[in-house]
Image 1 (tube, rainbow, N blue to C red):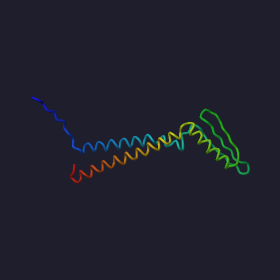
Image 2 (image 1 turned 180 degrees about the horizontal axis):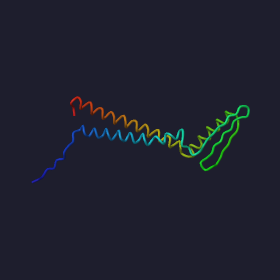
Image 3 (image 1 turned 90 degrees about the vertical axis):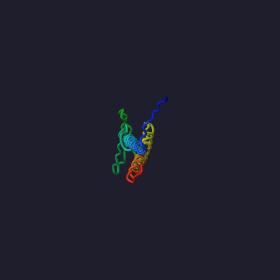
Image 4 (image 1 turned 180 degrees about the vertical axis):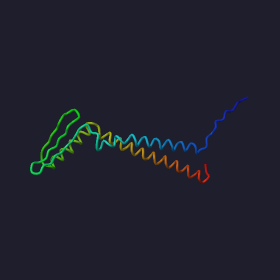
Length: 134
């Protein structure tokens, strides 16, 4: 005599609903995790930069690092702006901020794709339910 165990099967709609909710949750987590990384484009650097332009005198730039090291540069406004842009680009690579920003952008796009896919799945199941299909 054999005893047969049958697993209770859930309807397909319950599985799709879970998949949709999980996908939306993962999308929210990915977007939330990407936010601090993408903010590094504009803020959160381990240095402070300032540029001063004075009419008739010239311009100067100053970079103060977190450890207290100071870098200065003086010249024409164009030279100072070019030096500051070049130096900040070098520092971003030196501190690995360029890679963190790229990872944040990628994670943000993945999160948005997951959100759209999850919301689409949930809406698909909702419309199927409203039209009487499981």
